[in-house]
Amino acid sequence: MGKGRKVHLPPVVVCHLVEENMESQALAMDQSEKLDEFERGEKDEDELKAWIKARIENTSGQHREDLLYILRKIEAIDKEQDSAIEDIRRYAKIIRRINYRSNALLKFYDVKGPYLRRRSPDEIHTPLFGIIKRRLGKR
Image 1: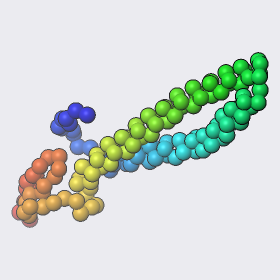
Image 2: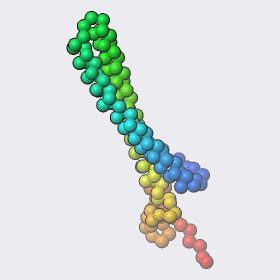
Image 3: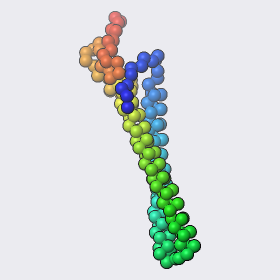
Image 4: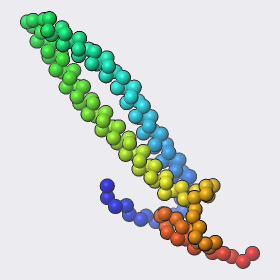
């Protein structure tokens, strides 16, 4: 990944950014769980391949050739599916990590949390903008 650039935005409601990031994280986790459900079929697939292999050993002629063709096709499809599943899992993990890090930066601006670090009564240290000087008005 490239180096991040500083972007100056007009006032944005930070909680909306955090909510979006958390929804992205949740969807990435749901995606991973769906893939787990999909992979439960792998056991059935492996049993089917073993059954076909056993039949190949006990069969001859055209039936043997047909079973060999079916087995090769199933194995080719399985290999491509496994590769795609691994890519999707990796992307989901990256999405969760990016959004987690983004939220870690944004939490400093959450007014409800004890995240702002004060160096002195009139300064606040923030991760994105450095030190912000407060203007203390007379009351």
